[in-house]
Length: 107
Length: 120
Image (cartoon, rainbow over all chains, first blue to last red; front, side):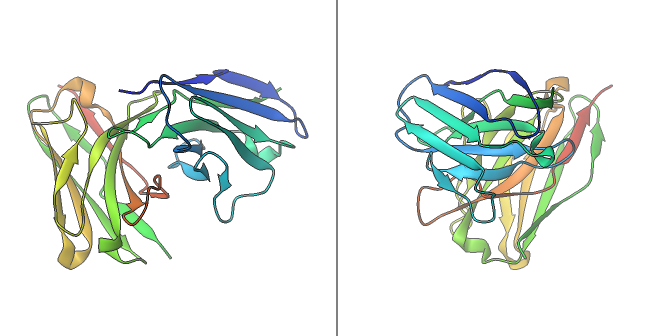
């Protein structure tokens, strides 16, 4: 299985801050990497697919970059609605795998 | 609008079975694969596999063969997950989630989740 390692596990930030979350794959996944946001008691919501494509309806303050093994999710100016857990997903291999999650909390 | 509506929470004893339903609406059922994913309490996600909604052919991820069975009732656009010989470590929220069949895309829409609790 391809292992996905996210960092940091928690980030403390304030409204208006720029936040960066990274995801590293144990082997290349090309650009087949997605990012999700999950709020308590809810299902995940797709933000980014194919490493850098913004899903329809997602605010433009979210962006993704990277290819191969190293990927980044950036929130350019954190809003109150963005405090949540973020997960990466690789969908390159036969068996998809998720990162362990990054909690974005209020500083 | 797209909806994936799952059946309600279940409590089972170890060794029992459970069947979860995922009723879909708002899109063409056979144009999307149906994935199953679980999330143990306070943990991350595990992919169980997916089912081809055109052919009914299931694909199970490693570690989820044997006790886990995916099925469909295409007449009512519904997918099912059955788990047998339940173990306490199967306690989790189980999600159905669709992916477009026509290209390499990730999950773009999830059901609301079904909590399965396995406890004596």
